[in-house]
Image 1 (cartoon, one colour):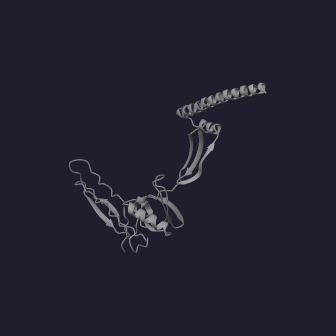
Image 2 (spheres, rainbow, N blue to C red):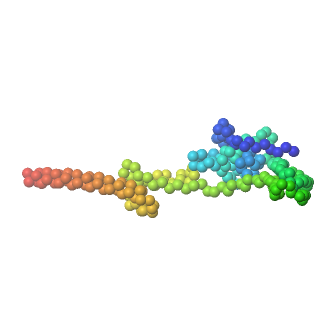
Image 3 (cartoon, rainbow, N blue to C red):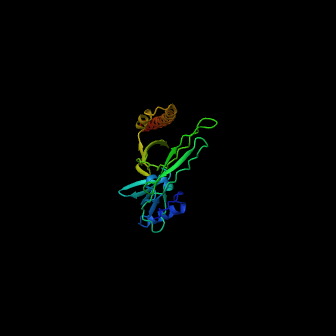
Length: 240
């Protein structure tokens, strides 16, 4: 039985566009997990959504069993025709043991159930010649990469000032929880007071100072216009 091939390069731009078109047509295309996905490499899943790649490196949402988890395009590939998702472990060949001239080492392979082999190294004590004994390098065994846990999408709360108005918005991942809406300056000041950053406090103080100055100028102008109107009204009353 031949192990399913997983493309270590992941999904290409053209393959991602094909998946996007397939989702738009109401179908959920199949993908195969690559070695970058860890222990589930070679398994088959279904793409259910393509999120915003600007918010996270893991934006391809795949249904695997009962779970729907986000993955990076490098974790996935297009499965070959007839792939069933059954994974056959590949036989890991241990690195050759480098034997030193003295002391002499013998390598004895002890058979174990397929598909893996264990290498047992035994030594034969012989008189060392010309120096201390040299240690053979231990055989290294491949360790499967554990699957990375998928946490919740990040939450972003944005406080903005533009055109004389303070606005507040909130997003989680690519989903908008609250569209920008206007709040009172006193509410914005309360939020800024929680941020222990002197530069932010100075910027807010400059904005509020400019708004107060503009409001005072407008009030002075209105008072002058009101005084002029009252004087004109008094003249009209005297004339009557």
